[in-house]
Image (cartoon, rainbow, N blue to C red):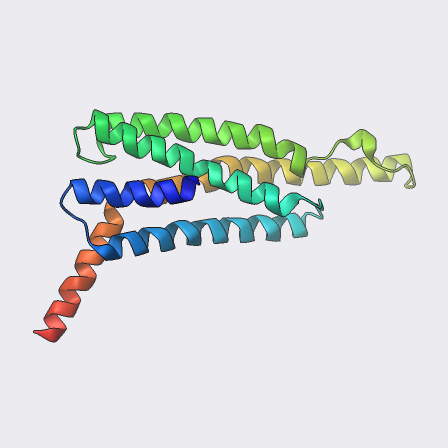
Length: 184
């Protein structure tokens, strides 16, 4: 739901600025679904490499990946209202973006902890105590590092990419100008 709202809102804002082209909607949708696919692929790769398995994990990850769109929607609407129709630039846009990014990152950090860091007391006792403990500790450290990188660094890059909708309008203009030069 949030991804569709993001696509429609980005297109609406481009139209309100007088920069609407039908290609903007397609490019925005492609970018949004591409970000979602790359993010889920990255998470699945890392969970495989870190030996994290969970039956409902794919659906959980799809749901958690969608939360960034809520923050981007709030950023776009808030920046549009506070900046008087000038987009996400300026202090107001960056303030709204900073708040929504930090809220999303904190939420992901707290929520994905239960998916990526299983309870150590539930582990089996088939290994000798010392060997299992150090192995589990190093694996938990790697999982914690990934969780931090994913929640803060990766989400920052993806939310920045999604909240800068002016880039899609520029790409459409550049493509139309190139087609015009070739045709003319």
